Amino acid sequence: MGLKISYLKYVIEAGTDEAGRGCLAGPVVAAAVILPINFNHPLLNDSKQLTHKQRELLRPIIENNAIAFGIASVFETEIDQINILQASILAMHKAIDQLQIKPEHIIVDGNKFNSYKNIPHTTIVKGDAKFMSIAAASVLAKTYRDTYMENLHNSFPAYNWEKNKGYPTKEHRTAIASFGITEHHRKSFKLLPDQFI
Image (cartoon, rainbow, N blue to C red; front, side):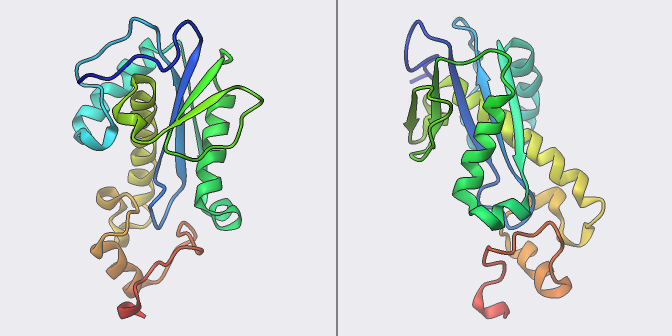
């Protein structure tokens, strides 16, 4: 079954999603996308179901065809202050702020969201695998965050963020145990399992 173009018909609808919520380092990045009603692309899907190459191919297609899109980050210091859930929602709000067209309805991947400027919203579990605008937002958020972490890798090669993007891989945690943490690590997260401490 293919992705649906919209949740509500005949309204300007933005889809929003985030990337990097489960990472130990780096920002959480969100995107918001308003797609034209006739948009379709056979590759478009939840970004987690796509290869790196497919996401990179889709990114300019989404940007060139979207009626409007916005991308925003919330960084480690703020994540540690307000918690990752609130930071994810804040990043989505900031991404919606950047839309040059005001949406009349917002669809959100997941089951938690804070009301944005009294615009009606609907939370949809696994929404990135159900609706095109959320899938498009997931692709933009993921590709922008991946690029950020790949660039950050050049300054901190010991953690191999170019490959693991800050996620809690065994390799990443072994590097934390060996080299300690950087200013880009989220101090409120459990960076090392007990056996490393």
